[in-house]
Amino acid sequence: MLASALVAFVHHLAAFAIATALAIELVTLRGELSVEKARRLINVDAVYGIAAMTLVGGGIARVIWFEKGSAYYLHSAPFIAKMILFAAIGLLSIRPTVTFLSWRKTLANNRVPVLAADAQRSLRRIVHLELALLALVILCAALMAKGIGFFGG
Image (cartoon, rainbow, N blue to C red):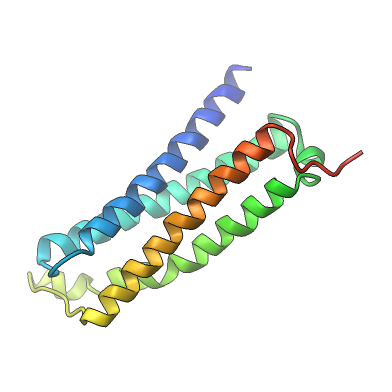
């Protein structure tokens, strides 16, 4: 029982870290890019990646070894929707991550990376979309927790 609670805690903590990282990325992508902002984006995106891996690992552990078991979750429409939405968020996160990582050499020389205004707007739109999808993931989690959308026997 304690192990289940600890895994749930880590899982939820990772989810909050993802939301926080995305919010920080969104705010940091405002205005003119600086060396400090670029470094912050790289660091926050790394936290985002670690939190995402932790969330997935904790989620898998909860489905397989804790909570209600995989048979229950695989018969839950909100759970399936939640997995699809989370995968979409992961795919959306590729472009910002690749962009931020491409700045490492420039930042090593203490120079501001080049980020065109349209590219910056595009990155902000992606992060906005990730946050919107994350809100839907949370809705699905609440529905799932209440047994809404369960289609099993």
